[in-house]
Amino acid sequence: MNVHLKLSLFLAFSACSFVLGQEVPQPQQPPSDTVAGSAPSLSQEQIRDLIRLSADKDLENDKKLRDYTYVERQEERHLDGKGQVKSTEAKTYDVMEIYGEQVEKLIAKEDKPLSDKDAKKEDEKIQKLIDKRKNESEDDRNKRLEKEEKEREQNRQFVREVADAYNFKFDGMESIEGRENYVIEGDPKPGYEPHLKEAKILPKARFRVWIDKGDSQMKKLDVEFIDTISWGLFLARLHKGSRVLIEQTRVNDEVWLQQHVAIKVDARVALLKNFNLDLDFTDRDYKKFRTETKIIPLGEVREAH
Image (cartoon, rainbow, N blue to C red; front, side, top):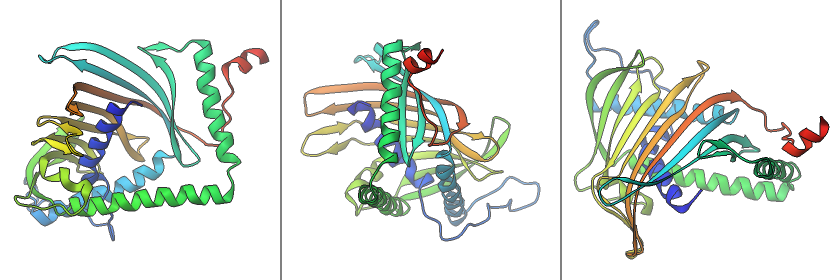
């Protein structure tokens, strides 16, 4: 994954963590209509409760995702100054969870399967990781788990601050794929001063979220950056107008998982080069997966026949 893609995914996480990552002390019930048969009307507190409930459910989604493998297609489009596509690069991956770590195995480039040689290298890379985790010492495992927990705690602190950074507005109901959704807008609170370093982007982004009425799960999230964001001393700048769209889908009637992510990035790095990109991720073919499954390289399979 190249540095431009990592930057974009960080922005997507930062934007959606408010909706998907808050800790919830105890589950609450979704808001009911104020009058039977009438359109619902939600107060600020009801909106916060709904978002907290959606976040609580997404914690369960994250746990269940560990039992799934899926296919993700990543497309990166480089644009010129007029917004026209200059070049396109597409890669497709099998994505799986191995001993608590999400791993991508490249299976196609430009929508064409890898050569036998490259496919074998990918299989061997994954099997090497499985063997490494399987034979991991207790000390190394504890260090890895401590690092992961530290990262989770940092994310929780960020999310707690996000909850204070926005004003909310209920914008009615909308049907998507035959299911009713609450539509909620979040705008930065005027004059809000972030406490965490990572939270400095919050006053510069607004969002619109669709939450499924029946399951209280996030269906769609649209984030827009309304001001330029800078990192370091003129090291990197993300320009106003960059955008992130995230969509989820219901899988096996038990979990909601990512279906599509579209990211529009207009950025400058180190005062030297502009990056005008459209990034598109499509996820499909969710299936149950067990981490102890042994991946046999393609060459060995052929020899067995």
